[in-house]
Image 1: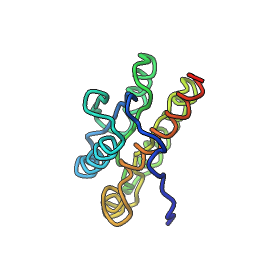
Image 2 (image 1 turned 90 degrees about the horizontal axis):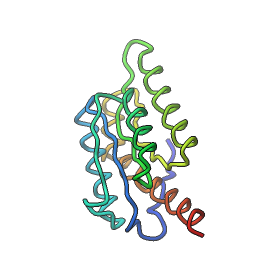
Image 3 (image 1 turned 90 degrees about the vertical axis):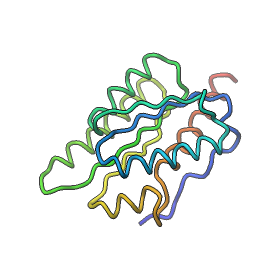
Image 4 (image 1 turned 45 degrees about the vertical axis):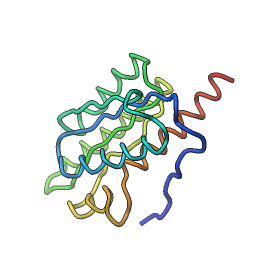
Length: 159
């Protein structure tokens, strides 16, 4: 298991507009990811008026909503939050892989930073450990990564 973690973005996130897109499936885990993301946004100086939260059914639906947000052009970054937990069928592989592929395509096509906080775990215990347990909170990590990328992109766009 890697101990590398994104560090809080250098510089304040004040002035950035961030959207959170979170699945409702595996609600216990996603609620914990949302809590971590909200705390990280607060810590970065991104208040409630500069963030939007959208809930979707599951990880499969996250990329299409992120694409719509990218086309609107009103956010500086998006944070995708969800939990795909391996079961007894290959469904996990399709949902997890396609969610991540879809998010990367949107990010590259639109030049929009997307923090990846979609957990892909073998079991519920792994998901709990990555959503505020001993391994940290991937919701917060995804916010830090998105802010850092958004600040770099803003610097190049404005400079």
